[in-house]
Image (cartoon, rainbow, N blue to C red; front, side, top):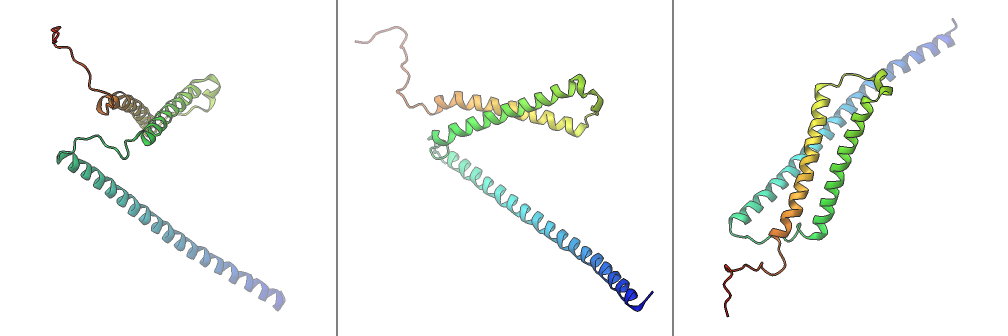
Amino acid sequence: MTDETHDRAAGSEGIGAGSGELAGRLRVVGGASLAMALLQSLCTAVLTISGVRVAIGLTALAAASGIYAPARGFHQDAIRIPMLILATVGAVVNLAVLAWIWRLRTQPSAQWRRREIGAKERRSERLQVVLAILTLILVGLETWTHTIVHRTGPAPVTQSGGVQHE
């Protein structure tokens, strides 16, 4: 082996050793980045939850202090109706996808790759069904009770036992 070949081999070993060290440093930087991203996500979640708690608290305070008028801001039809439509479409799509998955699992062509469903996946599917059905029930109740709570027409006429007053 000549000196030149020996120098090249030694140089390539140095690069290899340096790249291992570089990979270790990159793992540390990647881990630190992941940790910071998780902390930032947790911070965002805490601030969001705090904001929701404040909104719930202020709403409860307003209701307890005697404001019995229906909500006007977020409860206007321009916001309420698209949200109800979005919730209904989301729940129906969720139920349709779950039904499709269950149908595909039971087909004879899928038997060769069929595996046992874990308890966690089974619980997740049941929770999705329950939440979708609950969403549809709540949308139905909101649609039904909205006209009762936010009545805009004249008060209903009551009859006074068949006695006419002149």
